[in-house]
Length: 223
Image (cartoon, rainbow, N blue to C red; front, side):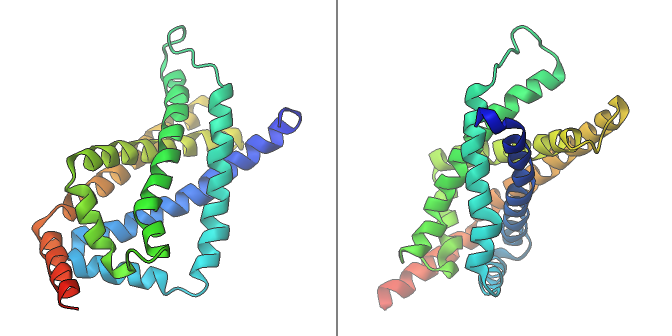
């Protein structure tokens, strides 16, 4: 890897924009439907996304494989990094450190979330229609709720700060002024996206999803 670190880091940077960006946008839209339209709206959104043509291939090639490379290589980069905030305590250095830390947290969180949701569907323990019930069970568990809050904040910061770094490393924001304006924009994106995700978590804890989960359980028992 060391002999080709420039190319590897460029690919790592690019794939962080494509898979993580797509993953966050997809999840933000589908999860926020729980806030806007309740259990039925969330169910309809999940059904729509999973009824797209070649959805498995699109997710595998466009999200999961690039995200796996980005995550594994990111762990290697984090391991190689020198976190020197104790010596140089200025803003961008703290952002550099937080980028590495949140990358590790995001990697663990994403695959844990996929285990609790998508993987359970794949092995037949859940259907797509029951994902809302599953999220209600997760978010009403205090321990999991705290972990999800931490995971969401880590993922949204990692994405937003990573976009700032991407624009710098690819020569799009060159001067100090452009980089300063970009940092304001992407920290604004971080706040907005994080708030939308947290609103979705709170919605999943609501009485509407509790009643939907109870109704599903009663139907299962009848069957």
